Length: 295
Image (cartoon, rainbow, N blue to C red; front, side, top):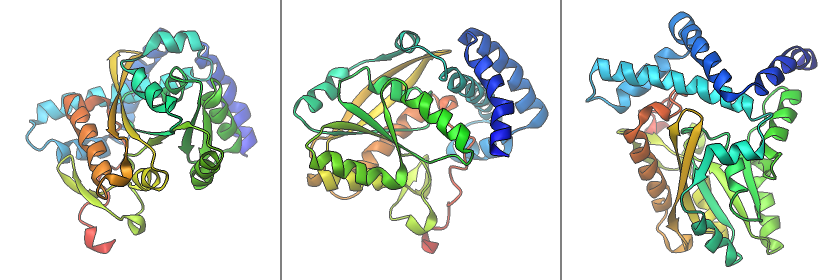
């Protein structure tokens, strides 16, 4: 069944991917009408997330953000499809980095770097950004999707410019191997997910809601004593993105526990509040709200 679905769907995806991005954005406008106005895909989830995060905003303000959120969500999906055929030249045209020297200087000291980012703007193009920086290898942790044929296709797309993706449960072993071999590398994490409740070790106010937060990146930074930076990517205009790095610490072992996580989430919250429509609100961000005593 997995192969049949892949055979039927893949030609359509490939056809879409070779279209110019401006055409895909027109198609995105059409899909917005279908998903938002007719199907109402995850509209309740987005609406609830926004109400919880911005209690001081009026209904009209929240509705405006909601519609922009869905427009961008569908744009991001189209841009992910474009990733299957996008060229390195077009990626460089559509993405820019403000301060690559921060990463280059850290790597030049033969020190690996942990890069923290989030589901904001266009995170699918982040692996392409990493290889604009240095000649060292860039690794990303990921979770496999169920269809093994689409899994292979996604991995080929994400790694075609040199980035290396390792499944989450093998990521620490890969970091340990590189560290033993004295090989400097970049390690990217999307660290804004909700952890499993049984693995919720730290709770924090995020967007005004007390929730459990992921702390694995901080544990790894302290274990290997790697510098930690925050990668902020913002949308400049449709299909164009600008990124900058913020150094959180060069010496994580000297930082009190959970302070690195706090710094990361504070910067992320500031970014979200500035332009909330580019955050991935279709996920149930606050599903563990009020369950702190159960963890």
